[in-house]
Structures are given as structure tokens and as C-alpha cells.
Length: 353
Image 1 (spheres, rainbow, N blue to C red):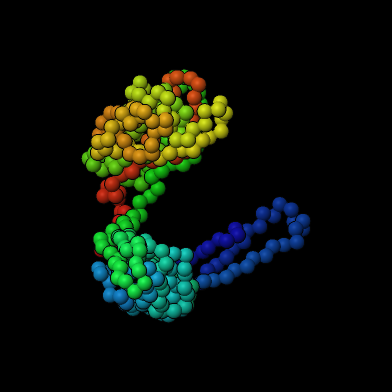
Image 2: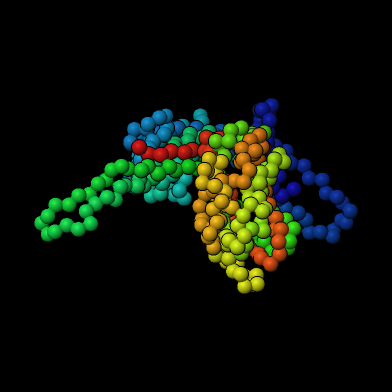
């Protein structure tokens, strides 16, 4: 019975509640008795929160774009309690770990680029809080990259130049993580297949990859002491497979990353490699001629990556590596798929002008 709540109905015009206790009566005199603590509360009639950004003036409704560390003024804009109650507290959540209580109007600045959703919670004198939400969006600018063209030597009293143009804006996006980390050992087992999985669950139900342009690249950080014995392919949740590196396509004697060819199981140093549907610089085999280590960078796939068009986006994506010849090993350290922000549902992306 502990914690039992009892509420009178609208038909209870008296406001009285009757408590009836029925003892078991199985062992009279065995127990000393019983006790109950009863307390009453007034049910919530929730207040309503209304807030706004007063300075600077929002670009759009409840949205403002500011610089790093620029003060922003937030105001209560007519929040009210239900009839018979009064507002007792104001709680501002700035979405950066800062929460301020007590003040109707506040000022706050953000020290990191990004999107922040600021909310005001109001509480009445019955301890009840609002159920509605008024999101105030703050977009805090990224730091632009400026041209660094300047005079390298200037005589005392002489003239020099500094060129701050052009300016390259940096894009900020709330894209969820698209990389899976954690080592996957690729042992020396001829003909064996090794996989590493990446699961997406943030796309809309049933959403598919409809345009190859929305697949930006597949990236991997790995090392292996002999590129020529590998076949690498990606499998999507719908069952489509694209071979990124075909066995026998070259690379005999070429290493991937700073691999250790000493017979040990110690990992070497992985290099960042990626495959881009728009790359035109040749595949791994084309670029392995005459080099001891395949340089980090972006390459063509052995087969058209647009073969993944039509794949379900949510679900398990797998990179599969087949070791076809013995005597060499390696490691995958991390890999990921990068899609266009435009197909991400509800994702904020901005690049300050």
C-alpha cells in the first residue's frame, strides 16, 4: 500500500475521502498494530511558459544567429499560472550545460560553435511546471578560415601587405556520428572473411538511398602488410554489395599504412583511406604501382559505388574483408559511411556568411 495515491472524482462535491482498513484477523494479539501516514496535495493545474529572444532581434521566429561569446538577452514573454495560482520560479536551460533559476529575464553567451535550443520552464506556487515547450534556437558561428597571404620579410619602416581575402566559411552540422570505432583484427587466414558492422537508426522509417550523389564516401582507417591479397566490399541492409577493392587487381608488395611485417600480432599505424563515387584518380591497384605504402587519400572503387542506390539506410551496414593469401595480417581501426546532410531528417546545418 505504500505510495498509494487516491483522487476524488468530479462527483465528489464534499471533498471527503473515506479510508477503510480490513485486518486479516489470522493471528489476534500477535502483532502490536499498524500505522498509516496520510498527506494531501493539490492536483496540478499546469502553468504556461512563453519566452522570447529580445537582443539581438531574431532572424526568424525564435531563431537568432550570433558570434562566439556574444551576449544574448532572453526574456519571459507573458508566462502565466492557472487560475488560483501564481508563478513562483523561472528555470532557463541553455542547452550547453548551464541552467539558471529565479530570473524572468537573463543574459547568456555561448563559447562554442553550434546549435543551442534554449527553453524556459516556469513553476507555480503548487510546485507544478508547464507542459508546453517554446524552443528558442541560437546558432553560434563557426570560426572562418582567412587567407594567410602576407609579406614574409619587411624592412624596418618599410611597407608590407596582409591579404585577408578570400574567406572560407566553415560549415557546422548536427549530423549524428557516422563512424564506428574499435579495432577489428585481420589475421593471416587465407580465404577467410572478416566483417565490421555499422548500424544506422536515425533515418526515417523505410528511407532509402535514392541518389548516388547523396553517398559522399566510405572511409576507413586501417593497416595491412600486403595489399595484394585483399578483397574489400561493402554490404548494405538491403543486401546490395559493392566491391571496393577486387582481389588480383594489383598491389603485390604494397603495404597499407605503417604495417608491422614482423610476424607479431601488434597493430601498426593505420592510414585514412576513402572511396568516393566521384573520384577519377584510379583505384588502389592503379595507385600501388611503384610504391611501398599506398598513400592516404581518396580513391575510385573497383566497382561502381552507385550499386548501393536503393539500399535501406537504417539497419546494419557491413564492411567485409577477405584475406586470400597467407603470411600477412592487419587491423581495421575505424570506418564509416558519409551521407549528404540533405537526406538527414531534422538535421541542422549552417555555414555563416
